[in-house]
Each structure stands twice: as C-alpha cells, then as structure tokens.
Image 1 (cartoon, rainbow, N blue to C red):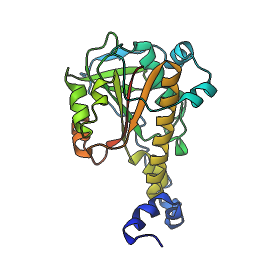
Image 2: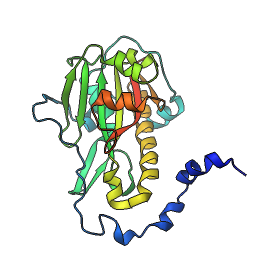
Image 3: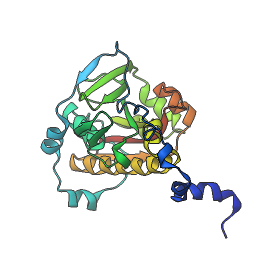
Length: 252
C-alpha cells in the first residue's frame, strides 16, 4: 500500500478523472469560443524577424535523428560562443513551430499535443545570441518573430537566482522558459486537461534536446524552480499563465 500522502499526486498520473467528466458539458461542447493559440504581446514591444525556422533546422542540423538520440545528454557547461539567430530559430521551430493552421481552434506544430491545443507560450532569457541584446523575449510562432519584452544585461543571473541558484542557467546562451495557459486545454478536456499538459511538456523538452544535439549545442531541462520568482521574472500572473518547464542551451 502506498503512503496516504502520495494518493492525490498519484491520482493525477492516472487517467481515472476522464470517467468523471461529462464531455457534453465542456466549454467546447457548449459552443464557447476557444482561447487564442498565441498570447498577444504588448503592441509597443519591438519585433525581431526570425529566419524561417523549418528551413533553418534543415540547414543547420548536422546529425541524423538516430545519432541525435544515441548521443543525447544533459549538458550544464557551455562555451562562451554565441548562437546565431538562425540556430535559435531552428530550436524554436523544433519546439513550437507551426506546421499548418487547420482552423482558428487548431494548428499543427512540430510537437504533438492533446487535441492540438498547445497550451504553452515560449519566453527566452537571451544572454548570447548574435545580433540580439540580452533580455527577455517572447516567441510568436504564428508570425515567426520574437517580441522584445525587456532589455536587461543581468537577466541570466536573475533567471538562475529564480531557479535556486542553478548557475549554469546564467552561463547559457539562451534559456527557454515555457509557460502553461491551462484554459486552452481545459476548453476541450475540462478536468482531464492538466495531466496531458504535463505530458506535452515532455514532448517539447525532448525535441529541444534532439535539435540541440544536431547543431552542436548542449541542453539541460530544469523542473526545479521557484514558481513565484519565475512567474515574476516573466511578468505572468501565476494563475491563468504560469511557468511549467525550462531549459538552458549553449554551445559545447
């Protein structure tokens, strides 16, 4: 028998909740509008055009997928060499790139997601990307652009501090922060949404690992962080949108 204190969290890992949901009463079934699949960013935020991500990945990726899987590992030490904008675009497309838009409620991306609901937003803590000043950026996958939210030469140190002093984050060329907007998945799956959001995060992380391996970069995902500090760093509300996963990336 498992300890009583584990029961709630173990229930989350199961799919028993699905049998308790009336799927005729979900927001989707009741005809309510689907949440947007891309969070609007401030109108005044400068935009950075990205090289076409799919083409960039095909161009800069050097390893067959089999080799990338064989040699995949977590890397916490990075060279001081910057990533190019083309390499960054390749990594962004590998993790959240848009393959095609089927309808206003559905878009297929480079990673699987339950019901193609894609609950994540991507923020970047940029330390060393050629032609980009250090700061906080938001990826706009439907536009293949970055929105420059805040310039800050100390942003890497602040990110490391928000992750309990894991200093390899400060040494990275870029750290990917993924936030969850649960309402996107709740619209279709109601209380069954939350487990699949967590599963989807794993798809994103593994794609980043393999894409990094293909461009001679190292990656280390991070699941230990100060929730409130990370949400404050990204300027998200911590309720309707909150940090769920992150990954440091750098040349190695």
